Image 1 (tube, one colour):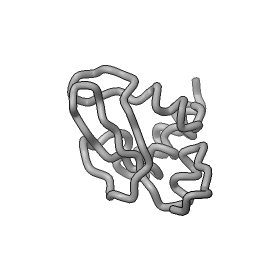
Image 2 (image 1 turned 30 degrees about the vertical axis):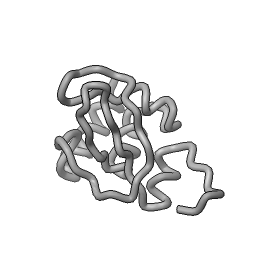
Image 3 (image 1 turned 90 degrees about the vertical axis):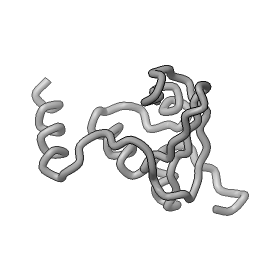
Length: 99
């Protein structure tokens, strides 16, 4: 990623093949798959602006919010979350439409 690129949404990070590296105050670290996070936030109709996303992320170890994050080219690692199959994504989308 070049120095002159301004990434403001998760979609921008996905477009540049990046992920989010998150570090909690408790010391727990993880790399989140930006493409999956973007899809999840879009299905939920939540804001995909990176500053807003950072406030919503919750540590899987201690449960606190407000972790520090940065964009990285590292592959995703950490706990599995969200739908794992295409069928599960369709089910989530259908369920949210019926609210």
